[in-house]
Length: 117
Image 1 (cartoon, rainbow, N blue to C red):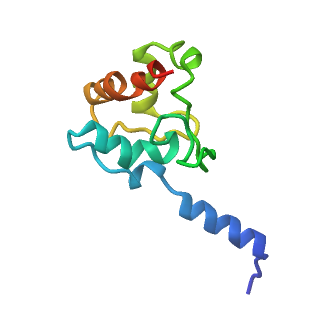
Image 2 (image 1 turned 90 degrees about the vertical axis):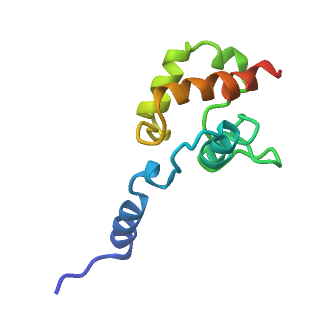
């Protein structure tokens, strides 16, 4: 019988439980604000800054959309591409929403975070 060390077993367990981060995300049902809260705010924060209500960075803090200098460097098409295909920690939403929905989310929710500053 083979023996596995505890660190090896923990690594295997973490790998198996990590899985696909997008699978736990809900499908878009038409309400942009609700979808932001259900799917996006967990990483980007309610206010788009990657922080919780106490101002602490979220565990998987996403891009800070309130930083207008950085947020406005990218074109809408770039943000839609990242949303659909994913990048780094950002899961792909291609199976959760259409490109048109992603564009609408960008215009009506995301771009407004940078405009508030």
